[in-house]
Image (cartoon, rainbow, N blue to C red; front, side, top):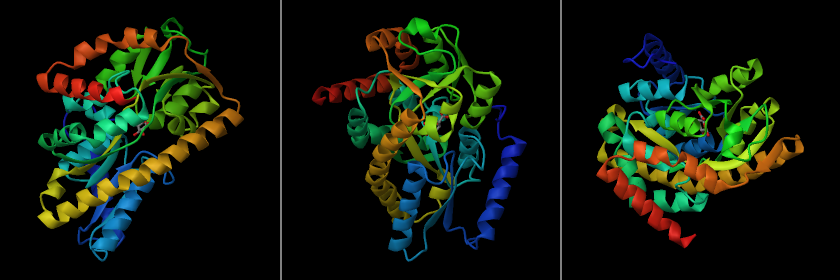
Length: 334
Ligand code: GTR
């Protein structure tokens, strides 16, 4: 983890190593975009970027390509984002959470109980609302290319099933590095511990934390279910993933190549959604068969009410309020 102050020495080293890896694969001409993902190679986000790479190769006779370093090889999302802004990485697939402290507009889709369903999230982010949130990253040195699904996040822990907000009291819960997530967990009376997802499994084993919150596929692929066997369907957040490009790299592309990159990224979205839906089903079946103790919560409205104060704390600008309203208006079709 970086100390939060500027570009850490470790990140400069990682960026250097990444550039070295790029020339080692014979693409020192700088055309293959180097991308990072915290998930393993078979995860839908990584596969979607591979599909984007395939489309780019096909349309440019191999002139444009993407090489993804999966499985968090290049570091945590927070660290690799820093490297991306600074230009040591060309692309990055991250959740919105580590962007929350960089750009307030990214907190909107991460608000608790904002989206009524995954479809509501897809509809909103496919509209001009999504474009506006992606566009807000430009002033921070990032080009927002597209959103990918991340499904609903649920609390899981080693101690007990969560039925009501009171059941959360005193639990030590890991959250991504985002003040919004810290506030959400504190609002439920639990202790929030921000850390990178790669540290969660070991921290559960050692009892440093009692639990975390995530979607079915991450709970499964990170093997967190082996230790934290209570999975409670709070569905408190349906925040998407986002694919970003370093503005430094983007500005060096011709307008034609920029258009190709945007198009290929957008076209990888429906591909990702198909993989995502399958992956959620597969993860859920596997976990139920593995004996994970899944429960519905007693009263979703009680969780929504307890977490509602974070809306007022993080939605403070007129632009944020306007976008939140637009998203809520799109829920009507549910
Ligand atoms: C996952 C997401 C990752 C990462 C992780 C986390 O759902 O796909 O990008 O943000 O959650 O909790 O750190």
